[in-house]
Image (cartoon, rainbow, N blue to C red; front, side, top):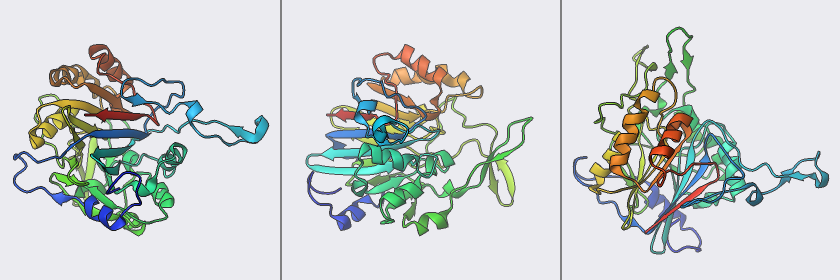
Length: 354
């Protein structure tokens, strides 16, 4: 929302602020990203939920005692406490504050039509405060929750910032197995739900200049090579698509702390993404890295160690690996960077302030 905290929303002002504007100059020029006093990242969808997990550092948990009751006839009193819903997908609510100006956007939407929406309802999320939606990339486990969001907002619509390749048909073609074509997002259906599609390959700034979307990420490391056996359907045939070039990340600059980077799956590579954020902004300090790092499974586990080595050189204060990072990588990050590592869980809010 625009304006002071606690006042009625100025919907016309919100729409103007939420539409991404093109960054002037070449991508190699530092982008002026307004430093914020605080950013709060709330996990709406992730692969796990732990209702007994305690608050930890910047992480404020949504434990079972904090979640609302729901109807359940088989319990005395007709109520139970289900906690939050976990699913194989990712979504986060990002709220920035600079002085008395507060802005909120949604980053990814989870995998199921109603998982994210159900968690929003249990968290008491003010869906009318959301000013924009950003998709990290076109995979279905990040783009599945638009129907639920539309239901909660009564189809009032929002600007949706995406890379133009999110509509691409894709499949996984592992040797010795049958091909698996992934669900493909429909532009027509998205627009029918009232979302205003804004396609950008290049970096964009949103919400009063407080949020940067990286656009396409340069691949600069020697070990992050994308996703093998991943194909795209182009010009009437399937072809290898390991780079998934529509992968993009969200960046916020916290005053006196440095950059906070949020990824979806991190198909561009967690280190490539962090370096891109620092290069685009000219800010040489990485304060926090959040989201999916895609280090799970035999194809990616060999790059766990070089990823951690490079991450330790960047020396972030907070590292929150989620979604597709995988348990082996999370375990190693926790061992190698015990002061920075914070485990994620659905419903957790991470508060990072100047």
